[in-house]
Image (tube, rainbow, N blue to C red; front, top):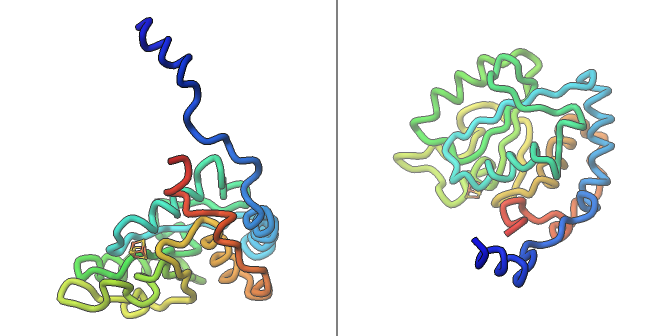
Length: 190
Ligand code: SF4
């Protein structure tokens, strides 16, 4: 025990310092997103996320939206467990043949008006996996899609920009986030 304490005192803190703010990209996009959610969804946008066959890289970035650093709930956006409660469906991955029916059922269970975003290169066009005996490829091959968020994986700031562009196309002129200012969350803190 004493040896451990001595070592802790000698080595000190080895992790990176906590970053100040949430990065220029999210500081710029956040208030616009909050405004759009307030105007279009009366302050509450419910998202149901479906992993239709991804490698989980995209899920790591989507999960990061809910952590204390990005805290997307402060803009009125929250993730729900049932598609029946969702305004927006976020779909990741190429759609595996096993998930084809489940994805279609989730889409059909959503109330109107429903919106769908395909996330990542895989969701947009099948990515590395394409179409095969195990994969249907892009999300639009299974259900109607309203927009895509490209990236492998897209960072949380790019996800926020994609959601904003879908729900309020008038804000399409928002400058694209600088990828260096908001690196993929899975790389942070390592
Ligand atoms: S886009 Fe990239 S990170 Fe996302 S599921 Fe496909 S391979 Fe994985």
